[in-house]
Image 1 (cartoon, rainbow, N blue to C red):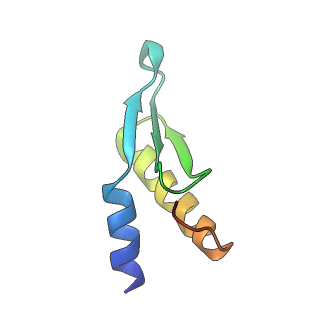
Image 2: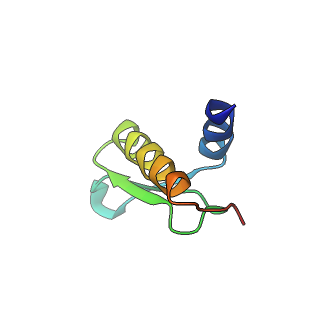
Image 3: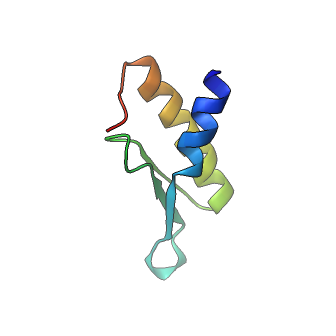
Length: 63
């Protein structure tokens, strides 16, 4: 059940390429404060998932 929750949240993530090819930025709009950066898109996704997991443990709620 929690895997489905995480998967749906990650499907809602939005990613942007940073200026001057400095990496990627990702965020989940409905999860206040859940964002990450990474040198590659995959690194950004991995970091974003870790932030999301921590956010859930701390009791975050989707808006």
